[in-house]
Image (cartoon, rainbow, N blue to C red):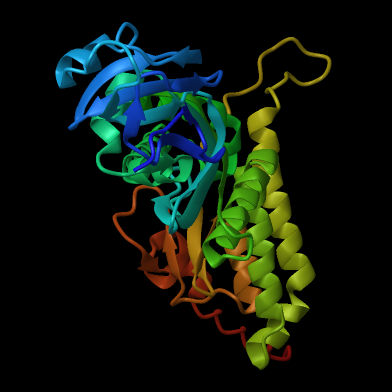
Length: 377
C-alpha cells in the first residue's frame, strides 16, 4: 500500500467540498492548500487540524490534534491513516432557481386567478468551514454546488411562495409587480440567510429576475382586458363610460331582426340624441356654476329638485340612469316597454316599468279621437 507524498485538491470547479481519495499518509508528505481553500484532517469522524492556504510539510508540530489522537511517533516518515477534506470557500454567484410548477395566485386588485412562475438566481459561499464540514457533508466523498442547491430547494421555494403572498396581500396587482422585484428579492434574502447559516453557508445575493404568466393564458388575457376597461373608466369618467355602453346596447338592438329591430332603426338617431343630451346636460349642470342673469346682480332662483331618473335592464345589461323623457323615446324606438325592469333611488327592488307611478302614464292607451263635428242646421 503506497504512501502519499503530495496531498492537494484534484476536484472540479463545481465542487464545494472534496475528499482526498487516499487515507495512507505519512509524516514528511507535502500538503498544498490553494488560495480560497481550507483543508481539514478527519480521523474516525472527528474533525481535527485545520490548514489554511499554502504548502506545508507534515510533521507532528503542525498537526498537533491528530498527532495526539492517533499517537503518531515523533520524527521520521512515520505512516498514519486519516482523511483530508478540502473546502472551496470561493463564492458561487450563478446558482439558478425557479418554481417547479405554477403558483396559483389571485390578483388582489382585479380578482383574477393566475398561474404564475418565478425565476431568479442567488450566490453563496462557505463561511464557517468547520460547521459546514460537520453538519452537511456526512459520508459523501464530495459535495457540488448543485447538490447544495437541491438540499436547500424546498426551503427556498417555501420562502419564495410566502414572500409572493405577502406582496399580493399589500394589494399590489400582478400587472405592477415588476416594479417591486427589488423589495421582494431583499425580503426573501433576509428569510433565507438564517436557514443557510445553520450549515456554515453565507448567502451572498438573492434575486427575483422575473414573475410571469404566459401571455396567451386566458386568465392573463382577461386581466389585461379588465385593466384596459378600468383605465378607460378613469379617463372618461363613469357617466360617459356608462353612456358609451348604453349606445353599444342600442346599436345591438337596432341590428336585431324583426319588428323591434326595425322600430329601433327608425328611432335610433332621435333616441341616441336625447340620451346623449340628457346625460351630458346633467353632467354640465353639475360642473357649471349657477350664474345670475346678464345685467342683474340679483341671485338666481334656487335650483329646482333634480328630475327623477331610472336605471333600466336592457338586453340583460343594467344601464342608466335615464330621465323619463329618454324612456319615452326608447318606448317609441321599441327598446323599452311596460315589462322592462326599472329602479330609482328610494325603490326597494326592481319593478316592471308599468307598475311605477312615474312611468305608468307612458303606457296608458291613447284617448279616443272625438267624433266629427255635425253639420250646422
